[in-house]
Image (cartoon, rainbow, N blue to C red; front, side, top):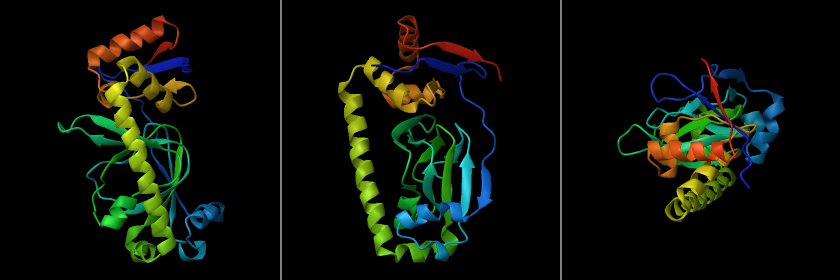
Length: 226
């Protein structure tokens, strides 16, 4: 059953929708987060120069192609991992994260540039481990690297399932699943051009289905001023 009851679309200019958020908050590491490091087989006493990053919904944590200075451990919240299409303009969903790690591919491969774009869906808190201080120590930690390998394997499975769904499910089903995955507190707020690209629909077809969902009572459309 499709559970979303509200769809909030915020318009800025012609056919462009997004939600404006406050700037990311950055704090020093504290004992409150030591258990997260421990779960990743990292001794908190060795990583006191980590930082805590808190993002509002719809903030960009990483941009594909930008320099990655940290390895991030997710504390709480939800974000989506996306990649640009070949035209370099639209973002296509790969998978969602609500736990785990990112920046790990760049750590293992020693690439300086981000391989994906990460955008928050809800408030998102993570621990940033500065690579310029701890990169070699992380790579020498076999237990930590093993956990990274396990997570990468799980992401491959998740991405494969998303691609399979895009190939065989009808447009309505793909969009309904995307809205359900991407909703926060029963509200969906996203760039609809990217949404269309993620579910394999034209922008016009996406709007037809959204209007259909509204007419059938699955969604409520609410316009918001800036």
